[in-house]
Image (cartoon, rainbow over all chains, first blue to last red):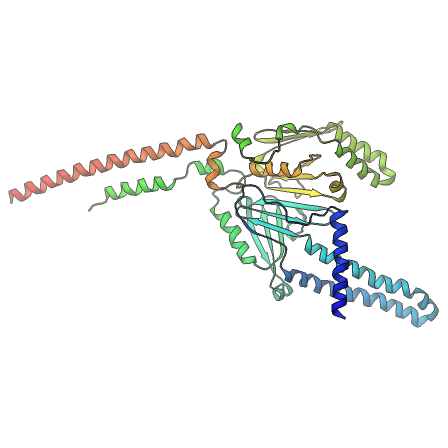
Amino acid sequence: MSKTADRAGRWVYRGVWGVLVGWLRVPDEAPNVPPGSGDVVRSLRPAPGFLSYLKVGFWVLAVIFDVVIIGIWVLILGANPIAGAITAPVFWGLAIIPDIFAYVALHVRFDTTWYVVTERAVRIRRGVWIITENTITFENVQNVSVRQGPLQRHFGIANVLVQTAGGGGSAAEGGTSAGHQGLLEGVDDAQTLRTLIMQRAEVSKGAGLGDDREDSRGTLGPAHVAALREIRDALATT
Amino acid sequence: MESGKGLDGPAKFDHRAVTRPDPVLLKHYLILSLCSGPFFPVVFLAHYCRYITLRYRFDDDGIWMAWGVLFKREINLAYRRVQDINVTRGVIQRWLGLASVAVQTASANSMPEMKIEGVLDADGLRDFLYAKMRGAKGQSDAPDGAAGDGGADGPDEALALLVEIRDGVSSLRARVDALEATRLGDNGAAS
């Protein structure tokens, strides 16, 4: 079944994607890089494991949903065969059509998610109907949390949540649209990303709250340290 | 402040030119209001008042935004306090070429503090805001900023002081050494 079905599926999906790009103006390339933010470290979609992870969730839900609907239909068929025959298209349609939509939506979700990580900032694009692009500089990052469930571990992916200062109602749950945070869902190099972002946050002298100008002015540069070292050497008893 | 403008580089976004939302925003509000069905007159009136009174001012250090007919609202925020920038585009907004740029500061509220609507060059505005944000440029670029001139004097003065002290200490050291040498020589001669 697989080869022709696969080709047909690809063809249908390309059509869906064409409608999205042409009519709904969904951009089909990566978001532009924040200017002057250094080299692009990575610019990509979630890891392929994320797609598999989404599909597992989809199949679990689809099977439960379909078993319930087909079960109801079988009960009706058992009680009254004529009513069962009449309602058959409704129930089977109800069982199958939402699944197809959900399956396509899952692929679209995967293909419209972009993470651009540069040396100094991260930009996350997400959404189909409403496209949001969130830009966070690492200077403002307060903490980075990595979350991985057992299923995500199986697929070798994890969620990286980058949080800035400030509160938000659903921020603790790591909602995708809440403020003061950026969620990088389903990435396969979570530890690398975490290290990169935390290095930037640790190097920063400010508290991530817009106070670095005054702080950085009083600090000593390498020239000062060299002069101080020479003074120490001059004072050292030989 | 020419240096602030120079930061933008190739981006042609002129922040001083933006004072009113683009007329396309009214069209967007009209479509949004139509979606509310029977409540159209009320919803549209509210949106129309907002559109009519909406004013922006992008200074060198911050943004000022005001709107309202009966209840006036005014928001001020400094570029340096910006935590993250969210650009949101719905389907209708994409058709009209609009976007809303939400700017967040570190307040205890997950809703954005300021939502700039009706700016046609949303990407330009975002790049402009990004360039003004903390940590947007590297550490080496910091003296290019407005405080760069004042900041450059401080460390240099400290360095000059340190160099003076170093020279003083080394000349002192030389004299102490010479003194000690003569004393040692005297002692040696005495014994």
